[in-house]
Length: 135
Image: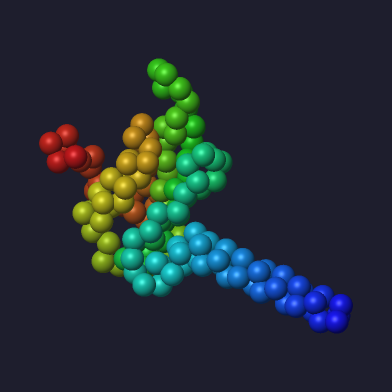
């Protein structure tokens, strides 16, 4: 009788652990990033509280990485410089200026004080800052 109750408790604990693991897997932002990358969708993965961790963006099947650099403004320390690069430069075929502008707008929504610098090969596009009336 005691063994049956103990076995049921162990089964209940095992079920709880499996359920917890499944929920953690489903809610994992890294998994969502990979899924969005495969489905050629937009996804922004970032930890805004930690300026030492880079953020990743997937857009139209392309993966971009942003390196955040902290600086001082008049009132506080903010992310002032972001260096963007492509994780897979061979997949950049078909990338247009409007795509770059879209990505910059998404980054500036999270980091409004940041100046975005693009690394090779994206910096080869003649990218100009958006005029104030288009922002």
